[in-house]
Image 1 (cartoon, rainbow, N blue to C red):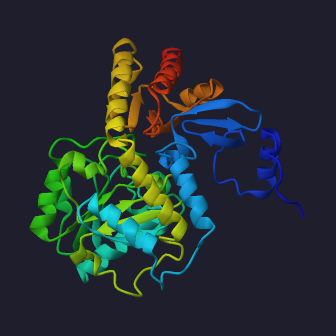
Image 2: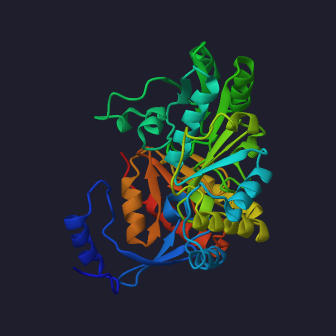
Image 3: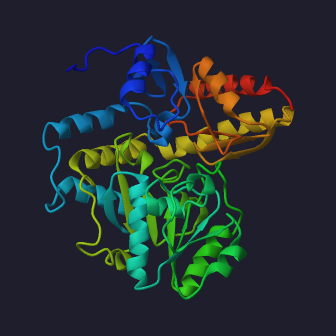
Length: 401
């Protein structure tokens, strides 16, 4: 039996994974060992500028000091108790989320998939026999079987059928198509206010407002998946505030706890009561460590004025990449909402990710040809410029045709 000691080299870690870890992820051959802000280091001491920290979870960068301190204090006080007890930190966390959103009540879990699974159950329970839920092509709602079925992307369904009954798909942004899917068995519409994995797709004007009217007309729940857009990513506490359209239910995760695992569902009180005792649970949901981290995350964003900083960074990224678009015909479109950036290319984007990695910049490619950036809200202007220059240089040198 071995025990963990000093960090292994990157090649040694790769070999360890080949032997002991199921290979369900395509991983880079790098062993990351330390992070600080928007910087991260590998076992060999190489420094990387991270424009995609924690797959969007590290909205405050790596190891934000206030979150670290809160977690350290909590782990020495109370690590976990079941939800058959009250915990003041969980109640305070729920209050903070409610006061910064639409006044809802919270159910806590551990991930975005779990939050969306809870939303699906809540919609059906509240529907009292109605069970159909409308979602949208290009969306992504998680990997559990219910959330996966809600994800209207066939590539994620391959080999996993039969899927959960009751999900109907409309093209994202097509209000008319969604309207045609509503019938007497429909209970809810689930949508990302801005699609993340789908390529940072921003909805057309009036689409979300139209969904709100449609739900009001037919007595449906409007449920916003804000797993990626929530907690300040767009320069607002929640993306629905950017569009002025309030949901009945909202799901959160990723950045919710500053990098610690945590998820939540917020629902209007008259809707939330349908999730009655015994109908749903999450053993570790809202545990004291996640709650303290969640509170600390909100405190940092507020104290340091990071909502405004996210907007300013978004303007900086938009200016740089729209300027690049004007000179580079490989860029089809630049889509920006705060620190949520999508650069749609006319070619496959895998080579961009690989070349950026070789130049010590971490980025993501989604939907095959969209370079997706989810940088930290507290990224410095110097770091933003450094990363943009690297990425711009890589895109300029891409082969044509």
